[in-house]
Image 1 (tube, rainbow, N blue to C red):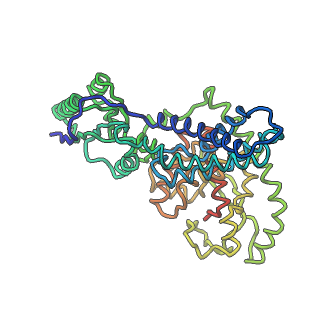
Image 2 (cartoon, rainbow, N blue to C red):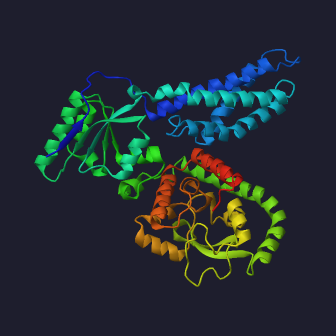
Image 3 (spheres, rainbow, N blue to C red):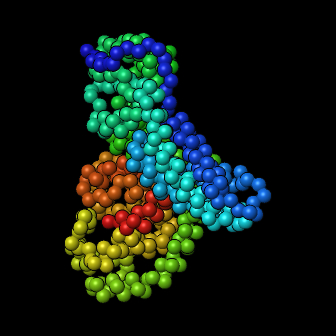
Length: 458
């Protein structure tokens, strides 16, 4: 027998705003507020050489703010539900908006003066923080949330429930239908329960906790009749949490991955060009520091300066990864061991190198060779890969793309030294593999820059 849990019936159809619509509205508001910041700065600092109001330049400030917030993930699902995250996003985007102001200064140096650039950014940042933490929170009203019905054989997993709690301002569960579908009678009861709920509630989405429930006979027809979208619990987790649950990986997931079509080919070519340009740009200052770093490493502990370790790359190809030594030369006795937090094997210089990520810079040569990319899953050693493949389902899916110097799992998943933590990082890697794009790459690069500047390396 199916279990039906619901809120009081609401027959009148309201006005719901989807996640994408909220992000678009927030971006438009950011643009207007960023532009207003430049206008107010002009009123505070007016230059005698200005013959007319710099309307076009002011709008470009608004564009620069939107681009900056876009890069630092300022339109994630947690924005603007969290005041702290909203304010931090604006602070992170400030350097990118300032870069746009510097460009405008060089284009029109007698119009967009240095004081005007600084004041435009300062006033814009202040207004954006105030707007995002006060006025725009009206978008969090319960009446604007997407109304959803939860359907499953058993109670939702903790991962789905955590997602629903995190997305409570954007997705509101109005009813639940829980019951087995092992027999024809049970399936008919489940469909009847869904039909009854649709008749008494206004629903925008039907969330099914298992992928195979989407093909339940009669379910899609009921949803189409009532104008209800069908989404899976795993897609909900992916949308809000930025991960792909390991237990949701099936044949359909592999078939949905980006292919070598008209979009994928230019993306791969541009990625390769960017890899080469960034490698060259970062290598020049590193080569100046290398003699000093090598001396510090040798004085701190005996052993080689640069380590060459076997790692598993794209499609299982094994290559030699280069990195500066950060541990004692006797750190391993033939068996690879995952590093732990505050690992005693790490040397004093090694801790500094890890905090600044300088130990990873020699991998620029691996990138130049085409063995790695700037962005992708971190490559693991063959022995650990074999062990983790036996322990963690779908771990080998990481090999579908080139490994990277940094990645979505590195900037979002943090440090991993246990099987549970490695599984969570795998879920971040799977999200990147499925959703890789220029937008996501820019977000990862921006987050990596913040981590390096903040000495957030392990």
